Image 1: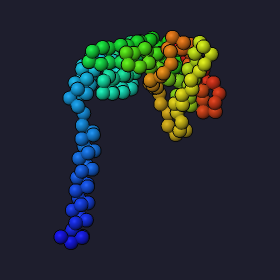
Image 2: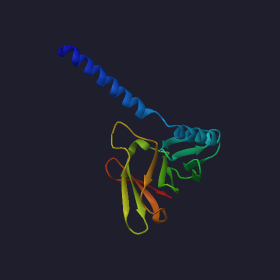
Image 3: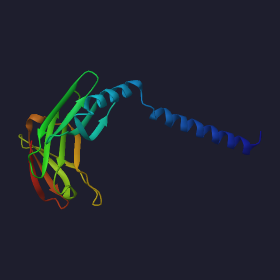
Image 4: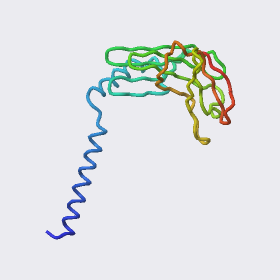
Length: 174
């Protein structure tokens, strides 16, 4: 076999191996499919999901209760379901926190001027705080926010919301 044919065959073989590895990596396991199906059946008629984050063991999401002025965070697995809901009564944003079996979560729905929001600061009763950048780009913004946090949620007192220039836009109670 000449060198040119060998290089072509080797290149084709490498392409097949690469595509096969990518395809296998993107396949969802039967357990993940079952978890997503169970989650969908549980929430489909009750909630409008703003943000859904699946992992191998559980799903967490930020949602709005259909036909009610409430938002919620849910942590869902095949064994357990934890959630918290809060009535939307704040003018600028509604925030809530959930202690889950797997993690702690913060969720926010921005009602007014989400395009002005740059970051939030989680204020703790211990005097400490944790800043999280939300909208880093000027040409893009989000209206909802959901994140795993590694803080004691019992210490969370409020959330300060900052604009693109670093000024405080407003404070959101928890």
